[in-house]
Structure formats: C-alpha cells, structure tokens
Image (cartoon, rainbow, N blue to C red; front, side, top):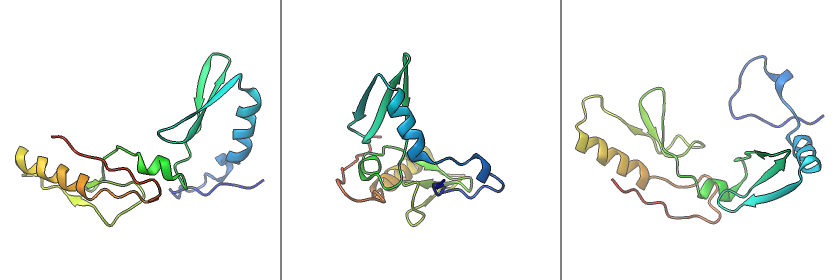
Length: 126
C-alpha cells in the first residue's frame, strides 16, 4: 500500500493514513453521478443522496490559484498562502482599525499562488 505524504507531521498517525488513490477509486465506483468543480478542479461524487468531495490541494494548480483564504498563524501573523512562509504579515496588538485594514490589504497584495499555473488575480475590498 502506498501512503500519501502529509504536510503536517503528526506523531503516531501512520496507522490512520490511507492510500488516497484507492479512496478515490472506491468513491468513483459507488457514485451514481460525478462532476468536477471548475473553481478548484476537484470531483464531487454523488452517493446515496450524499455529495462527497475529496480535497487534494497539493499539486492542484487550479485549487491554489483560486484560493480565496487568508489565515492567521498561532503566532499572530497573517498568512496569505497555506504553503508559504515567506510572505507573512506581523499583526501588531495595538494596531488601529485603519492599520489592520492596511495589513489585510498588504497581505492580499502579497498573495501569490504556490502553484502558479492558471494564476488568477484576487482583489481585496475593505
């Protein structure tokens, strides 16, 4: 059995890892209907009245270029891209509302998809 690499290195979790290709084949075989979401290029499986999506962001250029998330780290930094650490914005606890707006704008301006194919411009409206 081939295991998929995980981004986060949790200890003692190898027993819970699965072969994602096998899971996808099983979903495909059970689905009455499938469709691909254009925005993130991922399949949606319709099985017994339930919609099932398998999220595979790694190596998926469309998922990455269409990401519209802005995260905050446990250390208080804005993180425009989940896969990068070179564009973090430090948030000052004493920042005014206007300064926070500027930090958010700056974070959005630093957005650059980790996987750059089909890059889409994302704008920030505050």
